[in-house]
Every structure is written in structure tokens, then in C-alpha cells.
Amino acid sequence: MATNQNLIGGFQVNRGMLTVGAALTGLGALIGLTGTVIVGVALASAGRGWVRQLETPPGELAARTLQHARAASLAGLDAWRAHAADSAH
Image (tube, rainbow, N blue to C red):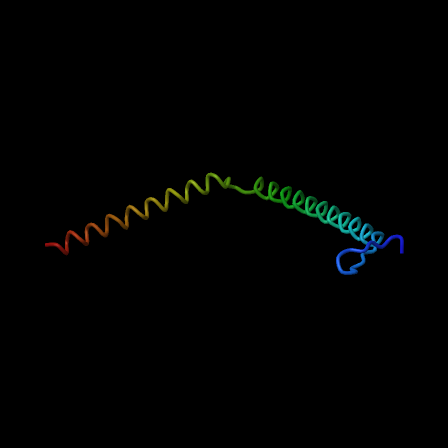
């Protein structure tokens, strides 16, 4: 019973088991973190390869889509104004 410590109200903790459990938990967390890093690197590498294979770079595609959205918005605004002007007369 030398490895046990009395705490409040007779609650006894086996220090050896507690130490081994804490060490295994830390080791498991380290292994999990390593696995997460490896998965992240693999996904980033695959993503870079996919982007390189695209015919149109993502930045150019986004700029083109934004230009189309602005044009559609202006066309809608012009149509609304024309309808509002016709309704007023």
C-alpha cells in the first residue's frame, strides 16, 4: 500500500496506475496529433495537385464570377428602375 495515497474522506489513489494512465494518454494524444498532421499534409498535397490541373486558376474563376454577379445585379436594378418609372406615369 506504499503506492496509495489517502486523500479526503479515505479516497485512495494508486499512484502507479495513475502515472501509467497519464503517460499512455499523453502517448495516445501524440500519436493522434501525428496522424492528424499526416492527413493534413496528404490533403494539402492532393489539393495543390488538383489546382495545378485546372484549366482556369481559381482566382481568375472567382473574378469572372464576381463580374457576372455585378452585371446581373446592375441589370436587375435597371429593370426595377424602368418598371418603377413606367408605373409612376
